[in-house]
Structures are given as C-alpha cells and as structure tokens.
Length: 162
Image (cartoon, rainbow, N blue to C red; front, side):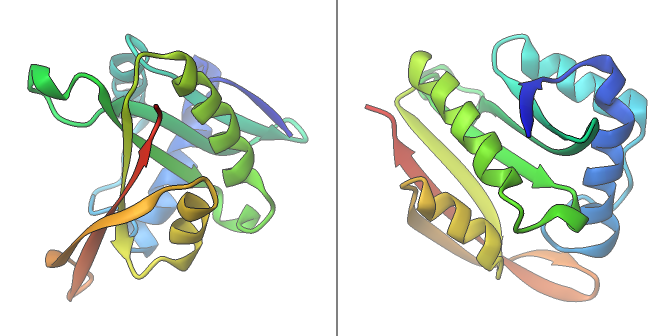
C-alpha cells in the first residue's frame, strides 16, 4: 500500500468510492452522487489548509482520508474533523488503518488540539477504526438523519492531539 497526497488524476476513483456509500449506505447523509467537478472543488477547498490522502494498492486508489475544520467560527481553529472512506471491496484489508496512520501523523505536526469524527450509526467498522486510534465516543444524536426511509443516529468520537 502506498499513501500519498491526492492528485487530480485520482478524482474519478474518489467519486467511485464515495458514490458507492451515497447510493447504497447510510454512512454518508448525502443522497445525490458526486461528479468529478464537485469532487475537485471539495479536494481543492480542503487542501488549501489540510491534507487529503489517498491509498494506492496495485496502482488502484482504494481509499482516501482527509482533515478539515470542524466548524467555521474562529475559536474552533484548533479542532479538526477527519473523514475516511475505503473502497467497499477492500474493507478489512487495513486500508483505513494505513490512511489514518499517515493522516494522524501529519496532524500531530500541525497546530491541532482535538480531532473529531462523525459516524452514522450503527457502523462497527468505523467505530472500531477510530477507537483503535484512541478516539473516544463523546456524543450520540438519535434519529438526526433520514435516508432510505429510515432514521439514522449519529455519534461523535474525539481524540486529543496534545
């Protein structure tokens, strides 16, 4: 596995990975597939200040992870939110761990105090990944999302970087 910064050539693969979760799961609350132009906009906005990493396996993009500001107000400037998505056919292969190892290493060097992860529940794989890296559950919101004709809970996990 190779972890590197996201490049323009990766956008189609990012869309394929993410759109699977939009179209088939409640992992993301988006309901309309993302096209390359929208994904490019998101990557560009994020990478102005924060890392967006991809994982390559046999020259194929099999996952991505990034950090972004958690909230827009200035007093939140030391708190970031992390996101990770793994190609559905590669779940359980260590892609998420490889991405988070690199991402958290970069964030340790940044001026970051707290990292947050928002997880649609239930999602044992994501909970397990975050808790493996020392995140602790700090909030649970019941039935805040509605997708595929069902209500979905959300939990927040937090990790201190200092």
